[in-house]
Length: 162
Image 1 (cartoon, one colour):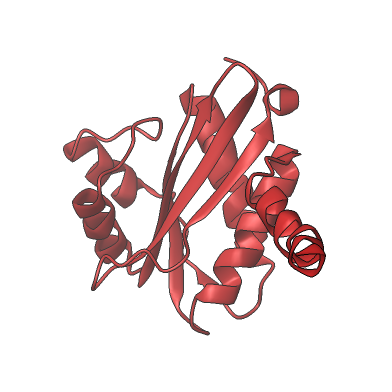
Image 2 (tube, one colour):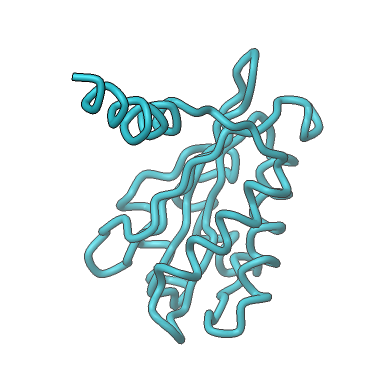
């Protein structure tokens, strides 16, 4: 019996503790972690675009999109397609999409196809009293499969408020 209890405390208890861990990271760390995770899951030479990250304001959303796009560009195996440009802005206006709104799967896929991306990234930064939740969905435009889901808990004071 002592051996079984010893094995439980040695092997299983640390696993249970890790599963319940809620480590808070900086927004910079969350973005860097997301870029690294996405790059590890996406096939080489795939065209990829960050199409939307919903947040408390358009200003914060644009910052997150620009920062994640820049980090993805640092990885030489990915071909990053820019979301900016009058054609994309026109399409988004026609579909009544704002960068701060959560883009549904069908809209994101149509935007990805329109700008020539094979992979699109959409996400959200939700604010809570103790932390913020940063979640990304990286979808294949053809299948809409989420190939690189990413979630991080961000320290609430790590970004500016509107």
